[in-house]
Image (tube, rainbow, N blue to C red; front, top):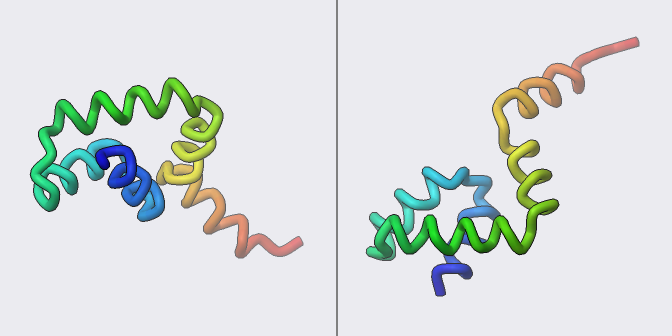
Length: 72
């Protein structure tokens, strides 16, 4: 159940802190439980999370945003 909810958070481009807060507030899941499951998912899916964090980082967003306006 917690894993499914974390996967929903990922689909909404949330970082870990946002996900922990959302699951605590809306699903009444203790932050420690969410963090523990999140860490296990990261161990099992290292490459996915590396790409995921790159894609949601503000630096990546800004870079992609401005590069879309770059004209040769």
